[in-house]
Length: 338
Image (tube, rainbow, N blue to C red):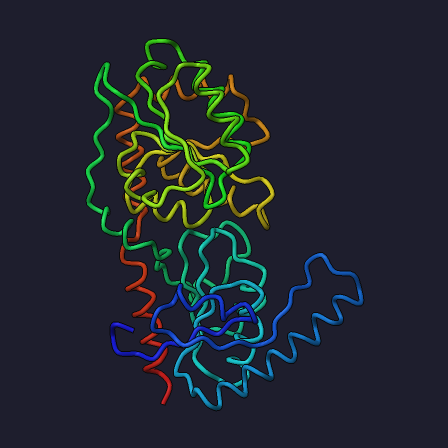
């Protein structure tokens, strides 16, 4: 929009709730449905809804006359991307994870380019389609792209940030306070933990930290999470796409505990990319215990050089200009349409 382009966000019936998220953009809606969790009759109904969505998208294209269409995955994008293929409108997909999502897998053969955030671990599209753009991050995170990582001083404070995505994570609320409490005293009393937890877990988290006499700060939501990431010596988190995008742009070392029930296990694939690059330590949730996590923490926090090396490796994977790269790609597609 800053480049003077007209932008229309086309999604399903929930789109009217998205106006605040896309200031200045137009919102258009089409019927959409998912097959997930449906029986045979539900799937037939979903198929009919998707067909109606394709027709509705084609009708809207006649009015909007878009020069390019970019899909971001999720079932609301399916009818729109199929309609773009039928109408022969230049199209691309963006995939934020290391595993191509189910809708994107269906649509991939129909588009010219696939904008990737990470190397694909499974369901990789044709190599000639792939262009690495990264995953756009919040302006607050992008503004911290040049923040310098300074490992903890010998005997100084150690700042650990814990969060499980926008909704927190119950497993992290269980394991992390117990693991920090098991640290050797010479490390434990240096640690200050900031933890974002689900509202229903806050009482449990606070009680655990109080019982062990730790310095901590907890909340169900932090509005300044990028700044807290930049201030941390170590981050303990899930490995969703947005988390890893900001983690790598800001450049901070992390222990990643992938959410084990993510679709196509994409969080494990995301985490593996950072682990392979030497940017993070990864612990599958199935193998996490307070004792194992505490042992890993003790080793990490006793080695400032390892922390600094992981921070540098994380930063090397970041794409603070991902939004600009995606805008470039969209304009290149638009310029192809006469």
